[in-house]
Amino acid sequence: MTERHALIAANRVPGIGAARVRAVIGALGSLAAARDLTPEDLAAACPGLSPQRAMALTEALRSDFAEREEARAAKQSVRIVTWEDPEYPDSLRACDAQTPPLALYCVGDVALLRQTQVALVGTRRASVYGMEQAKRFALRLAQAGIHVTSGLAEGIDSAAHEGALLAGREAAGKTVACVGAALDELYPASRKPLARQIVRGGGLVVSEYPFGRHADAQTFPQRNRIVASLAKAVMVVESPSRSGTLITVDYAIAYGRQIYVLPGRADTPSFTGNHRLLREDAGRLVTAAEQILDDFGELDLREGRPAQAAPEIPPGLDPTETQLYTALGRDECTLDELAERTGLPMPTVMSTVIALQMRRRLRALPGGRVARAAR
Image (tube, rainbow, N blue to C red; front, side, top):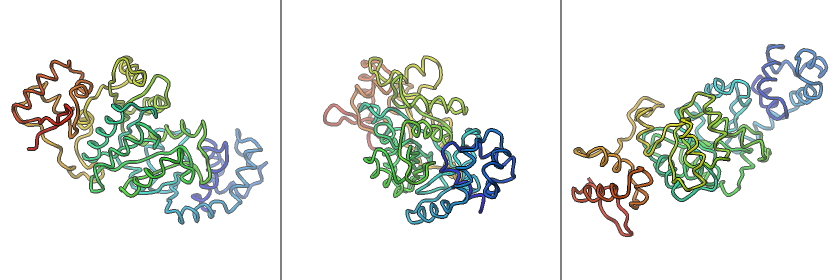
């Protein structure tokens, strides 16, 4: 048995995670060597491994599970990436030292696992504003060559994936979905069409769970640690005070990741988590993707090439005009939405918009909306 197949087999055994696998490797030199021991000898060689778990592990290693799992994966265009494979991301090994997944089940471009990502996360019960912002930030990041990572859940996660997809297949940045169930048991099932769009768009869908594993109360928090590990930074788009989003943030802080936080309305419960993070100085306030790109640099970081050019800020704008013009991005929006994005008082927004329209930098649209003027 190869070490790779041993890892795939061990990945199906409850209670056999990275720490116990490392203990076996430390005692025997390889995980595959445990196949030739009795459960009693294995338990004796590895203190902390109970006889019951030793029996489950040896049974898995002696079975043909790994071969059957790989055959099934091949039929479904799934790649299984283990510790033994060069595609396995160093970020998971470094950040998640105690519990890095033994194997990752991947559909799409596996190379994305080792490339620069920013995670956009938030509540399933998102506001229209939060969904729009997730799409706006994701689109801009993807256009600039940064891959957008999220959890394929309803709400903010899905909006982030959809925003990145709007950049088009030719864009340097793609989107990565980390899911909290096996690839053949995606939850909720309503996200399956989006998962297919992600793969068709050149992105990646990834799970640490073997085929047949259903979602439960443990799988989603476990999924969150992978999101935080793969990403270089995490942006909180919309989160109440009690949310799985903040579990991802806790992981990201522990891993030394930069946290970005979008401000929301002070009277909106779904943004109380955002505002708590800002009060505690746990994240940097952002209102435009350019603030994140300033930290990363607008490069195709996979190959060191310049990304697709961003829309230029017209010359001659004062700081307030620049802030508003940047926050508007490629969107169409109302003055109320601009006030929310920028944090500027409404009289300032109104006077700035009028000034920019008079100079033909903005154009008025039906329904009280505005957009950048064609240049």
